[in-house]
Length: 161
Image (cartoon, rainbow, N blue to C red; front, side, top):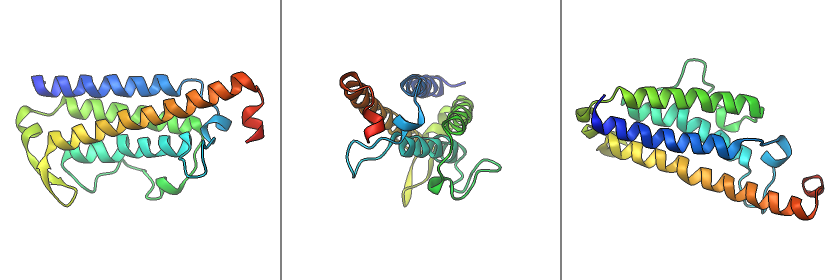
């Protein structure tokens, strides 16, 4: 494995592990809580992260803008799955991302690929989408922290939402 790929892989692994830690103990009520009417739920964010780890990042790694895992539904975004399914999909995406990054060479990281209506270096796409994991982990932590504080004042808080 190239030194650059090793660093990229460690960076991705650190943030994917942090995401898993942030999701520990999540239940359905908390997953569907919305701090405001315009907010995303944790469930929506996790669905989005499943798509990032299973399709967006592997597309960048493979350089194939149409890649999707065998059996991956075209309408995943519109579906509501169980938390167990989401966690399994995140685990599968994590394995695919880490394995894929680990196989990249320095030349492949520097390679121009089609991204966002133009060409950019593969590493730029990886940085951007790993950044999405960091960003959305923060959203989840915010929502879960808010719920925790409200529940400390009212143990039935989520029952009243």
